[in-house]
Length: 130
Image 1: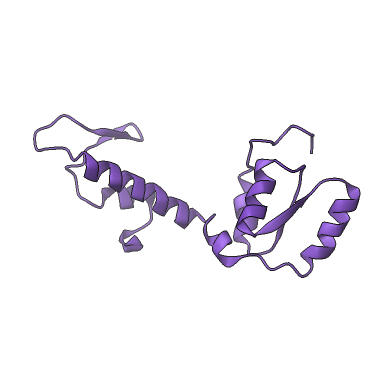
Image 2: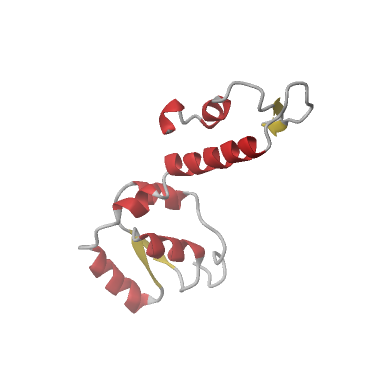
């Protein structure tokens, strides 16, 4: 990994690694997003340099990832957060009958006058979130 390649980047595969339930080792200097994320959520550790990486590999043999930290990075959790933001925005500023206010979703207008659970279907999370 290059010294400055991933300071503010998170590879999409990182979420799949976390979702596997196994501990994740991020080989990056302190301060990189991916390393900070796995360490802060308790789902893995970071190391940089030959010696620290060897030590981390040894510690990973007995490392148990935090279940709540793993769940907080799941697609379902993220979808629930997005849904909550949408519902909050709609409840603060509901469209009144006959108003022209609408939101663009995937290039299609989606007014809040539509079915109340249309955001749930849009996100593919089902109606059992709440």
